[in-house]
Amino acid sequence: MRKVRPVIRGVRGAPDILPAQVGRWQRVEVETRRILKNYGYQEIRTPVFERTELFVRGIGGGTDIVEKQMYSFEDRGHESLTLRPEGTAPVIRAYLEHRLFTKGDLCKVYYIGPMFRHERPQAGRFRQFHQIGAEALGVGDPAVDAEMLDLLSHLFATLGVDGWQLHLNSIGDDACRPVFLDRFTRYMAGKVERLCPDCRVRLKRNPLRILDCKVEGCRRIVARAPSPLESLCEDCEVHFRRLQELLQLLKIDYSVNERLVRGLDYYTRTTFEFVNPGLGAQNAIAGGGRYDLLVGEMGGPPTPGIGFAIGVERLLLSLPREGPSEEWVGVFAATLGKEAFELGLRIVQDLRRQGLRATLDMEGRSLKSQMRLAHKERYRYTLILGDEELKAGVATMKDMAQGVQERVPLQEVVHRLVRHESRGKAQAGRD
RNA sequence: GUGAGCGUAGCUCAGGGGUUAGAGCACUGGACUGUGGCUCCAGGGGUCGAGGGUUCGAAUCCCUCCGUUCACCCCA
Image 1: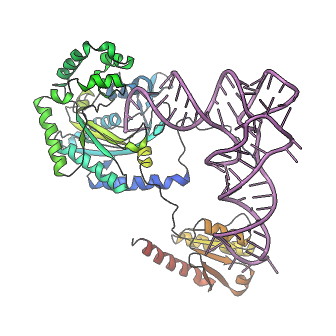
Image 2: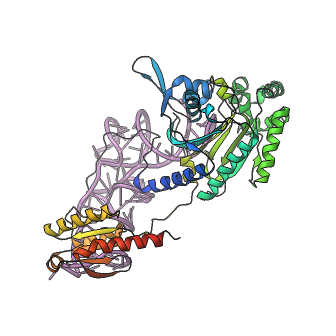
């Protein structure tokens, strides 16, 4: 083997998903789609890029995402476009642009796809990563929140994520958040000196963020600070209490985390995170919250909404390792010589058209080598076609799992294999 | 953007100034002339991340760059 140095490498933080891994992805996608559908969600596909201003207005100009993480570029001329860093703003854009709000009250949609943020890669953090997200627009009742959290907990249980925890908080709305911020900044006023440098900046720009600072000194100060929950207005208080009642009714475990703040500007009332403590620093496998003001701020009619996003890479990291598939399916035609190869090629074509997995060697390997290949790739049957078989008008059909073989007349071979394989599938499908 | 760790075979890693750089797995072939798995034997495969420096001599020590990993920050 000669050493080959690739001339062009992939982009940092944008990993390839190789064939050996892709099965896990597909399983998650299929399962998730099924569950989303059962909960009444329909898929929506928006472009991976949008006008930059959509994200600036939607996510908030002061957020880290907009300030330093967007992949923005000029579109031949003057328009600034951006690779989407998240999915909510594009969905709302499409919702308004196509007037989906006229089709009934509650609009439930989901998306699956890549997102892009320019950050330093780390365990569970990439520059191109994948989210499965959903938005429920048009109804502000806490039942919608509860249903969404139920969906996620059902999904994680189904996929076999173990050890996840649901953290829940309410950060108020435009009636009570200013009240809280006022109390909070007044409390902090005398303590600026004891805050970490980051938090001193946060105090001016986004005081809520001080709540989840990890620096010990700040945590001590925060511990005695007024909690957002204590400042909730009547409506927000009722909403949060009702949500908790419903979660208890649905038997969904959660814990209220007053320090749960999220980095996007648009959240109101409910915020939540599904965390896997086993993951390392980036341990949120899903997060989201309610955004009752966002649609209005983006120029639409006042419309409550709530959404979540799952980090697919992090979800995959949370799933149990699975061994290689022990499923033996399909047919490998092992041929010797030109005439046998051409016969094998026709048989393989026929089998494929009958819907079977079938292949043959094109490298001129020895029979032993072809058998090894058939075994390595888990073909159920090997069809041996050599001089002896051609002379007798038969094929040697070997069952690789059982280790037994028999000679079958050529005209019956395809029929036999199709019958055996469909029976095998029926058995495999029973478990 | 900041900090730390690590770059030796396709993969996981030994070797830490002294001939020609190693192991396991994987790969190819043989034992078994046309039969997979198990076993044994053999073989191919390396700019020791790149460039510069120190030295009689560098995979090994020093510097720079690149890559990568983890953490801060932030989020999924």
